[in-house]
Length: 298
Image (tube, rainbow, N blue to C red):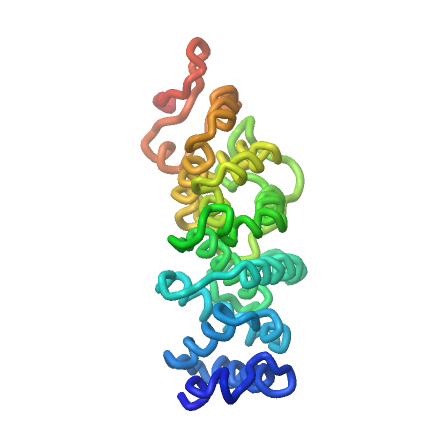
């Protein structure tokens, strides 16, 4: 507690020779022994959110300690967003970390198949950075207008391009990929961890909320159909369907151009889910109306 009370007057946290190395050692010790007291959390919140020291501190840590730091910041932003002030600098730094994490996780193999935290610190860095971006996009400050929100800076720095590219590289969800005329040939990237696809969709969904600039960018990048494919149940991505539906809702709300493009989409084929098949039913397309209908399996 003495360290927290002395910051930043008697301890210059921005000093690369004293403050930041001391914090890095503190994080390394805490992550090793599993120590997480409230004073430590608030020291890190103050250093990373309230002061521009997140990225310099992050660079001084090893991968396990980086994941530990991101997890603490993510938990705080999720549980107490009203007590945190998110700056453009912090948001852009996390986007940079997420991009680096995506590249690093791609080199860790075909995906560990487990939820966060995984056995791979590099994968955890990616996952927690996405969770922070999701909550940054949902974070609200009544004193900030839409244009002054950190999401504006994230959009200018390619957030949606990054998210849509990552989502596209995964290919459609497995239930869509395996379904008749919608089957996809060729290799697709594996999810680095359980819930990765959902987390990417959640970032996009929150980013789209009442932001026409983001809505238009998704359309201009041909991402509408890609997002519509995410509105399905996926065993490896809990709540993917719910986040997908929210993304579509936010994508279409108040945007006539996007609504028109969706209305012009043609039904490409039915998708039978295990739940429907288990009831002895299947989906067919009515030739006259072009609408999907349920019929009994002969």
